[in-house]
Image 1 (cartoon, rainbow, N blue to C red):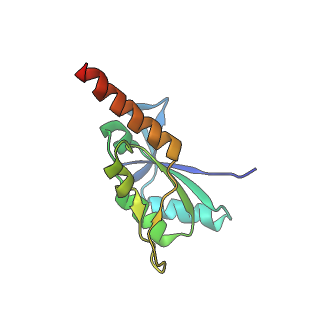
Image 2: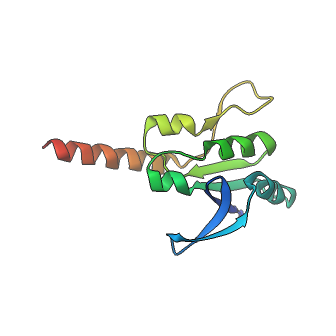
Length: 128
């Protein structure tokens, strides 16, 4: 079994929503990088990072948080929230210092494909 902690982000801060309600936000840490480092220092190797602003807006918003966590930790980051287009997938990629090539974040490929397919299906239906 592998434990994968999650950090939900709104306005660049660590939050929790009560039952998914954006009107019921609890701030639990101002600096996501510090939180990610705490997980890493506890021996964890993965992190699930959710861009709640992106999920709400329909496009990636907190990519800088993602970039900072990738640069300052060695965690493997699963990223979600607002990834709906090929451009969003590109935004959710980062160059890690000291590495020769781009290393994409581990957003769920199936989730990305499902969202793209759903969007394309809705656009196709509107044209009928």
